[in-house]
Length: 181
Image (tube, rainbow, N blue to C red; front, side, top):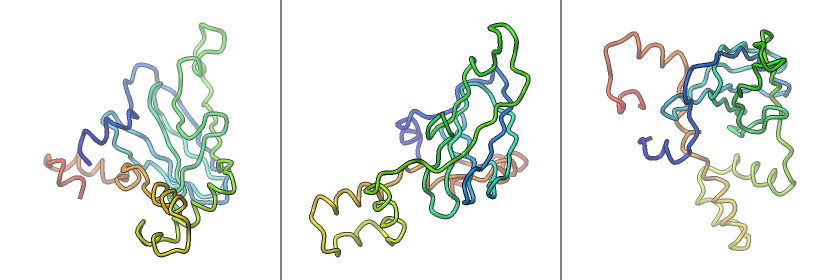
């Protein structure tokens, strides 16, 4: 993925001025990938949580986190925060002056989908590629919607494991082409 594609999403970590401890808790019956978005917009999988598992992350205000079903690659949500969790300075404050010393508890859940969205999701999971929809006996608009829904953001296809990122830091410098392979 080139930098233009990353920048176009606008989702990336900004700075590391205010540390935050977060407990991510998987409240689904699925295995969930906990993904941090780095300073360049690269998606890095930190942990895969089993149902009811907890992951303690030391992160910072302005660092976005997303959650994805490990099997289906469908996006999940942080309850009360949406499909992207990004800590705010206000999360650190109790009485306008005191720092919040307790970890923030973020529950990960399945988003509420309409029947239409759920059907699109299931059909896309079953499809080998987006061209398979043209062979279905459906109206053109439905085929177009299926193909659009199938085109997930490029970040979904370029998730790095934290272990691979750490390994590249311990080895001689590599080009971005080598790292992305």
